[in-house]
Length: 66
Image (spheres, rainbow, N blue to C red):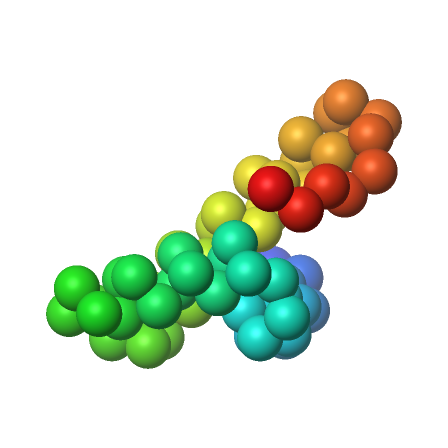
């Protein structure tokens, strides 16, 4: 569900983040290794990225790799 345009942008951002961000890559890879499909793991990474972005906006802090 949700707005299609926002979901599409978040999906593409998540694909890029899963390639270049070690935290999100490890998260998605762990889900795939545990038997989740790639699309389900990507959707979970989308939610994780969204919560990270919301926290960045809420706290008004720059992105920090953990």
